[in-house]
Each structure stands twice: as C-alpha cells, then as structure tokens.
Image (cartoon, rainbow, N blue to C red; front, side, top):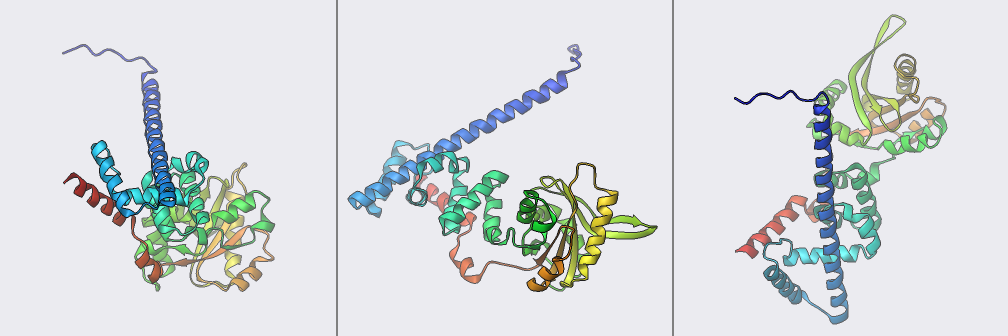
Length: 346
C-alpha cells in the first residue's frame, strides 16, 4: 500500500481555485462555439434571403441546398430544410448584423427559435432577449416568461414608489413588481384561503421566486414580530439583493380594502426598527389581493409615506385560446427538428 503523502496546508484552496478556472474555461469555450454557430446560421440565412430576393429562389432550391450541405458535412446537424428556413427567418427578423454579433450571439440557437416562434414584433424580441442574457435564463424559463407575458406584467403594480423612494431606487423598485402575479403553478382553486396559498407558495418556493423575479431572496413565512409584548406575524418576508431592503408580502384572499395598508404599514415600521441593518434601505411592502379597484388603490396609497405596492394574483391562468392554438411549444419545435434529422440519417 503506497504511503499517504501529507498535503500542503493550502492544497484544498488551490484545488478549488483550479476547478473554478477550469469550469470557467469550459464555459468560455462553450459560449465561443455557440457564438460562431449562431453567426454562421445568420450568415446562411442572410445569403438565402438575399438570393431569394434577387434570383427568386423557391422552396425546391432550399431542399437541394439542405441535401448538398448534409452530404458535404455528414457529421454536422442543423442543415434540414426546416432549420434552413429558420435561418432565413432569423436573418429576416434581425437585419442588423452588428446587433446579432454583439447581443444575440450570446444566446443559444434554441433560444433564438423561441424568440422567433413566440413573439411577433422586434421590440418584444429585443426585450426578452435582453432579459434572457441579463438573468441567464434557460430556454425553458425564457419560453415560460414569454407565455406568461412578463413584458406586459412587469412594472404594472400600483405603487407610491415615485414619492416614497429616491431615484434610482424608486425606478428599480417599480420595475421589480408585477401585476398580476401568476400562482397557477400551485394547483389551487380560486376559492383557496390565505393560509393555503401561503403554505403552497413556500412549498413551491423555487417557482415562487422565479415568478417574483431576479433579486428576491426568501427569508420566512409567518415571521414573528414582538411589539410592546404583543405578537404579530408577517405572511411572507423576503430580502431584495439589488434594492438592498426587506420586502414584506401580505396576502388577501378577497378584494383590496384601504384598511389593509394600515396593517402593512405597521409591519414595515416594525421591520425597519427591529430587523433593518445600518446599510439596508427602507423596507418595501407588497399587498397581494385577489382583486383590486385601481382607482381605490391609487387613492389609498396617495397619503402613505412608506413605500408600498398593490397587485393582484392569479391562481389559475392560461394563455388565450387563440394563442394556445397558434404558438408551438419549444418541445414541438425540437421534436420537428429531431424528426427531420432522423429522416436525414435514414
């Protein structure tokens, strides 16, 4: 049995550093390969589009091109007629090559397909592409955010942040809240009570944090506050890493009522006095209710000095019927490409 050589004292730290550097190099290599592939696909699509416009190429030419490219590069996938048509659509949707090189090439090809298939305007595609890059969304998360209409919901909560918080914190806080929030992943009916919703949200906290958005960290449920010897319990408490503040979330299973803000304001005061650190910003409150009258909510917030927002939640929500039938899922897209690849190999 070989002798066990004692390791230097700093060996573990050095090994961890080496692992991190190797992992980083692997990631850079993967990103470089993806970048070259996306740019290649754009260039092929641009050439096809250009020749179709100049020479009137039809579908038969694309079929022939696909076959010739597969024969020339038998080990390289992605040259099916369907994918060549996606390359053409990709180049047509993004005519600005520098933008493709500098921004879009950061996203994998299947992200590009989701942007093409599920969004109808360049502005929407730019917004979701930027968010996917900023938050490092997987393809499935990107599709989920598109299908749940994040762009239409983000920054839509009724708040008093412009007057209760300084810039730029007020802008970031407003952008961090949505309306409505989707809790359809909980599997609850519309008649669910507040405690049932709280319990389900904590049970599915990963999905809940994804719905809340980037920056939220879960602190606890039914957080105990002791004020003057009396006990009070906050429904849900979070900390926002970018805003550097606590976020109190209160759930109401019915319609919004102005008196709800009194309770929320009390909780904000207690958190600011008992939990807020020296470098933390003022605590923010978010009241989530089943329904709200927007005018009533605006009136109720108008005289409040503490930063608060009011939004609705949806326990059961799906895409409009017309969109459900017209938008292919990413799985359907992948399966179609895989089927064509299988036919090519056969």
